Image (cartoon, rainbow, N blue to C red; front, side, top):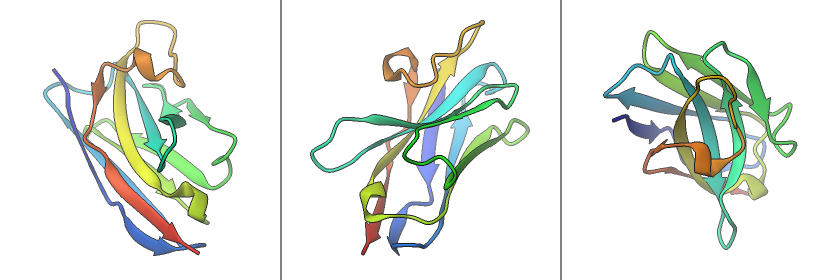
Length: 125
């Protein structure tokens, strides 16, 4: 079992930055692809960013160039640096873990076996 706990959400203004953290326990994350997803008001959950154990990264077009995903396997943690935030980034942000043997289905929520409880990010205009 992997337990994931997100932190770092909050209320910010458009243009501001936030850094989300996801701390894992139960197992080391080195064999897991880690993803960030979000669910805005009245919207379905969507992929935001993903990172393989080898540190290859993937981003949704809507956040490319503004968000950066990173991981620290020694700390068993994953981070999402969010810059130039926009009101449309308002959502609950979830961290998720996917065990990866070969293919990493980074954008497919159903492939992630472990999820955190989410952290709220609200961006005011």
